[in-house]
Picture 1 (cartoon, helix red, strand yellow):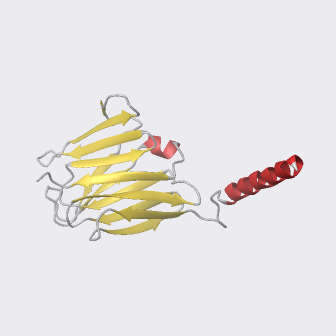
Picture 2: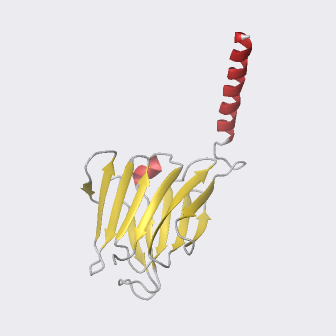
Length: 178
């Protein structure tokens, strides 16, 4: 009886390992990306290419968030959020035990400030040389002045995120503090 239980457990483990192997991303088993938005009026479009996934996010209230997942694998090296907001006074991206916060000033020259907290360590300011830095660009056809009327904030997740083979992250945003 003990041997039968051992064989059953071994077969179950083999099945689990086979299932994990089947989830390795490849052309026959591509990764799919999903986002669960916090608010009903938020909208998202997901664009996936070979080594990039972009989430186009429209958030009428300007204050919201989402949970993003990669199903059947992990996120590629280049993950971008296109936030169609009029401002970006706070963006918080969390993955694993890492929390990165960014803010774009509403006044010229629209400086970006960022910080990181790893686990229970204190929050530390970071600069563009940090592996936790998020590239943030203002993209606008008319004017890149804030408040944006026809543009968006293009945010590339940190290099550290790309190095970690993560399968999920969260993002919370605030266009302007009210």
